[in-house]
Image (tube, rainbow, N blue to C red; front, side, top):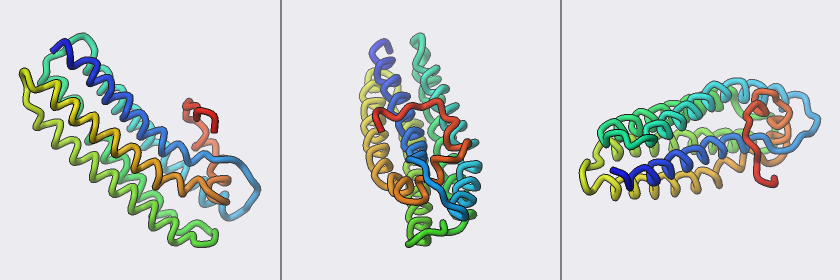
Length: 190
């Protein structure tokens, strides 16, 4: 069990990256009217979900401390992935509910964001199932390694898709919203 702690910490760090990718919605700032209203609605709706993702990160990190039993680690990881899946699904619903942003190709931007957020939700649901199925015993570390690799790939694909929201007027409007700024996350050099 001793060797599984670093792997589970890797899981928690990678999961944190998923929340950071959603926080990439906080691009730069600009002046615009209707776009600001749209951005405020979306940012206000996203904030509680980002907190849920943060709480899931914390529960996964806490499960990896102190050489806890493998079954306990599995349950914490699975529960954390379920929370993240639910949060991404709720984010997709928020973006859908907000309607298309009032910018050129706003409908496509909205549809793409909803599609990607739902895809990420499904991927985290699959990670939950994978976590539940990790064998305990000698193969536990290998199972966590596999889970961490899947999580890393998910974070990278999600980064590319959601970066589209931070471009142009929508990203600028979102950057001005307090609910998109209250993250406590620094963006490395952006």
